[in-house]
Length: 255
View (cartoon, rainbow, N blue to C red):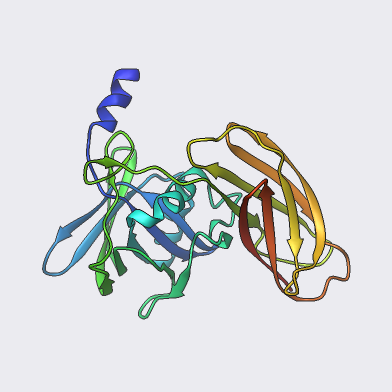
């Protein structure tokens, strides 16, 4: 199996953030197997395993967004690939700055090299994955951006691209009620991923801490819980994870 894994890693590809809005709500996943498969019409294929929430979302909605990852999004790419929609509202993370698509009902990711809005025209089972082929209805691209290239790690056209030190965090559910328990997960980025003392808090729009939670660390990743106080006023809040000078934030909406 070790030799087989090295064979898989021998390929060189770009990577995309695939965005959907299915029965379980909006989601993002990182998909290395995303390809332009036709010029006219403009078709993009993304290969997704049936265990992924994106699989069910595309089948149900018959549309998806393709956001080709730029160099600045290497940490967001890794985060989208490490966690699942089944237990994490990944789009709550501040690492994803979204905007509504023009022609389909999915969020699109700002800062990408290419943003393409796709409507499903074909799906083909190919081994343990399914190729979802979408026709591009609307797209924009930013010539100032450079792509990430995956080949035994992330590179910028030959140079290894390292994530800077920081914290990526997500809160689930992103929309909650007062008195509800929130799950907070995330990871440390950068070369030093050793365990650090971590604080998790809920902050209101005035910068006041309204709740504090606990967390556990494992291999650079963390998971924690925060109890939202009873009677907390509806509105926008921030979930903040701090470790020394490092800080990460997620969005939280109290209904």
